[in-house]
Image 1 (cartoon, rainbow, N blue to C red):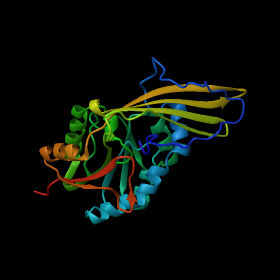
Image 2 (cartoon, rainbow, N blue to C red):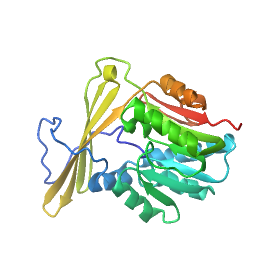
Image 3 (cartoon, rainbow, N blue to C red):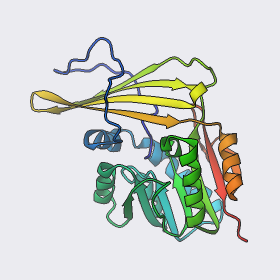
Length: 270
């Protein structure tokens, strides 16, 4: 799912858009992830994470001995990383739960194969590597689903294959303050309220997007619930399945911030 709105910068909003002085979580928001407007905004303005990580991701694959074959881009979003994999000579297969994201990816990268579905439920193709950039596994929402996804990836990998992904860890402080990130541009604005509860291993992003339609703005609301765990715990679950695991601070020179770690899990050759 590429960069999952992990950050934003405050900007003034010009034009006829009026925003309430108090922004609060809206009850009854849709649980559908990345519907049309948010998918389009994410693809256009929030895909830098995947693009910036891509060169280092490919170098890490090469260093792990993966230089050809099928690579699954899990949580592919608009396909930015998928496109880099194609250019590097891999056979890229993208996967995402959002129908809108899949439509965008197919439009932008017609030479790749794209599948709609979740990592823990879809039958993945046999592959040399699987990649999940941008807190994708955190979006699975529970330890059980995360472990099921790991087993699914393990089955799909050829012997010696690599699973490379990043995770968001819990905040260091038990009472992390809520944050409000605001971004805007011509004919659009986005508000993301972020609340984290480390004791429950949960991070919630309440997102409202606004896109101009004529003289008014269309508003869409979503709630994204992430399960956050320490990288060491995630590594332990991977090892229990059979992976050999190493933890990194980033994708090579692309160092991650905000309590995120990269895990490289290899399926044994024997």
